[in-house]
Image (cartoon, rainbow, N blue to C red):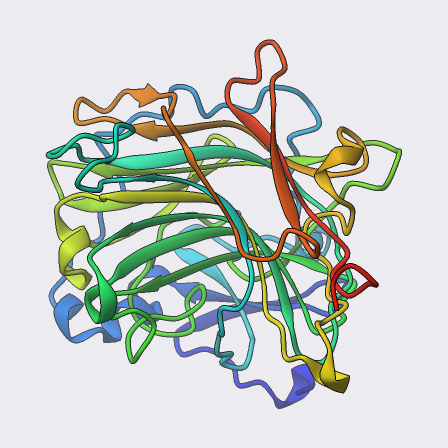
Length: 345
């Protein structure tokens, strides 16, 4: 679908077209899609939060999250930037992750353990994708089982052969059946910043054997309001109201960090869609995609290193994961791979 076929958002006061083709509507903050949600009709925007950004600040000048639409203008105060985009659906097929989860006999999180947020610094790449498929690097914060699964998800994605890497969010309260969506496509997430457009392309991205670029993501709960706040670098982007969830209305019982691709098995074999950098984790820094300084928020609001992480890899010959230990980087790992090959049929 071409940009000219995409409808202007209700409440738009200004439109900006980026050099990369993204079209951004600056929408009155009080007319954003969130307030079409039946549970948010009388919602009052929380512009200030009781949570703090300690531990989320940009660590060096490589931690850049820039969206090219800013070159052609800024959204005025009292508005939020919303990308014009068609609705897209999602299928889960193959992913390696590390997980912090509450289970009956899991020493990593004894019974009664609860999580109130998560964090990671994620290496940003532009993997090749094909035939309408996606490639993701993200954090999942979830709770509930089966059809009652609730999740909040944040990271970067590449879609259907685009040479753009996009920031994204996703949420659901019924295991992706009928609730939730990407970014602001449906009512739910309440955005507060004028600076970041969810779903818009980010730059620069890392290159093989060259300079590396990262984004810092934090999800943390404001217990006084019940809202789950999203921070990118040290900026508060907005929040998921606790009221739109069921099991996540209180706390999270599972956190995952890692990658995911969709696999349509076009041409009768595993997809060639890449994950991460498109290279296996053994190639290490500058060549493989990484997560570093992963952490979770405890009941007191403090960031903690996860313990006894579980590794889940669905197809190691296609995409893999391995831990790395560098001084000052906390818990870190490399992940990804090229997809289809002689070893990945």
